[in-house]
Structure formats: structure tokens, C-alpha cells
Length: 331
Image (cartoon, rainbow, N blue to C red; front, top):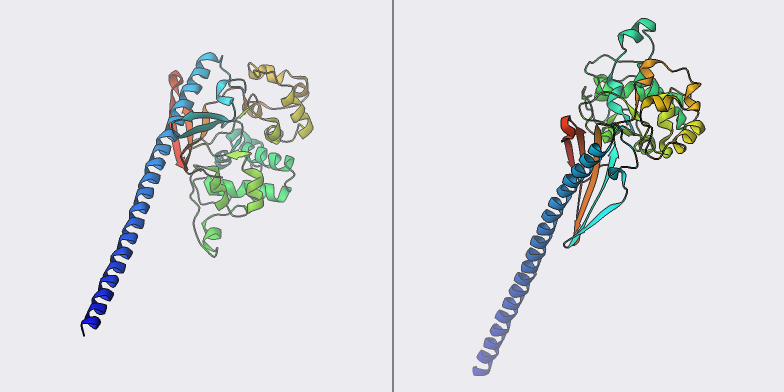
């Protein structure tokens, strides 16, 4: 009996020891997980503040360029420096600034005909629509898709519920989808909203995303010929409604002065441009200065990465106002 009691006591002690060991191991694991989670959160928070500092740095660089420039925005200025990376404690800050007048503002498609256009031909498309279609055709996108997209973006962004053009689509079309939704009938905030427009498939969006943008609260389309990269020469072809070939546009951009054209008159005096018959309304859409800029910033601290995208507007006294700020980055 004593031996049996001693054996039972030993088993009891071993069982209690096993339970305590298991509990201790679980507590240690949870403690380590909690420490890692806290460390990661601290690193992520630090990356967030570093990313915001890239915005402050971008403002400083742009303001310096505004002070140094003589009424022009061009690719020789500091803001246009690519692949800028700054080392910081435990990580890096990176950022890239883009001129939002070197892309096609989708919000411009919301405009209707001007009174002059209405008097000339009430059935024609507005200037921005014609320019958009010409740009897509220069990108070798079929005329059918070009007109469809121009009409549907207009209906998506204009304030009325009236279907415009041959391919327009309003609430009735969107509500009949397997997952129904309605048109916002307001200007876009980001060009990624183009994916919600009927007719925009993945292939088409990928082809367009480097050519288009959405300037918050602005429905004008202007192209800065000083910052337009040669890879997007189709934009210039579109702005001139196809009166210039893609190869001519590429050659013109490649021959551009290093610090850009000093004014629009110098641009129109180029031999390639002098032979074109362009009206005053179209000429007014080509500029050499910019008021809107987009920062794509990022920060890394240890293994934590934080991205943001900020749209800034130049105001009086060369001040910069952040219009929108998106976290995580959009494609």
C-alpha cells in the first residue's frame, strides 16, 4: 500500500509539473508574441511619421523651385529628381514628385460644350472628350473603346442624370449589374476610380493608368509641355486632336530645351508647331507651368513599410495646400 501511495504521489507531482510547464510555455509564447506585436506597431507608427516627413520635405523642395523659377515648371528643377532616398534612424525615407499637368485629368471629361462649341456644332463632343479620344487612338486603342470610355467617364463625373453621347451610362445601367451601384455624379478624387466605370476592364486600365490622373476639385485639362515625358508623347498628340503624329510628338519632346520652353509662345514657334492650324481654345490647354503636384512617399523602419500619396496645390505666395492624402498607395 505504501508503494502504491508513493507511486500515485509521484504521478500526481509529475502531472502537476507537466501542467505548470505547459502553462509556462504558453505564457512565454504569448509574451513573446505581445512583444513582437508591440515592436511592430511602434515601427509602423514611426514609419507613418517618417512618411509624413516626406510630404514636408516635398513642400520645401517645391517652394524652393518656385522661388528659383521664372514662371515655368520643368524637369531640371529639384522636384523632378527621381529615386530620392534619405537614410534615417532604423530605416529610409523615399519619395517621388509628379507634375499633375503631365497627365490627362479625367475630371475634365465632365465638362459640357461651351457656348462657342454649341453654336458651331451642338452634336460634337466637348474639347476634352475629343482630346481624350485622340490620345487613346494614338495609344492604338480602338476608336470604339475610345468613344465609349469618353462618354461613360463624362456621365460618371458630371452632375446630371442625363445620358450623354452614344455610349453614355447613368444609374439605370449601373443598377442592372450583378453587383449594383450608382454613378457618383461628382468629380473623381483618384484615377483608380476609373475601374468603377462600366467598360473599363483590367487590360484597358493598366494601359491608361500612367497617362491619366484625377485632380481633386478641378475639371480643367491642361498639359505642361515642359514636364511631359517622351514615353507619354501620346498625350500631346491627343491635346492637338491628332494633328501631330506620335513620332513628331516624340521628336519634339526629345528636342525640348533642357530647362523647357520659357513661355508658350516659344513652344508654338517651333517649326513642327508652326505648320499646324490650331484654334485659341486648344492652344490655351498647353502650358509651361503647373499648380498641382502629386507626392508618392514611402518610409521603412525595420521591416515596417508605410506608403502615402498626397496631392498638393500651389497657391498664393507659393504656398502649398494638401488637397488629398491617401495611405497605402493606389495603382
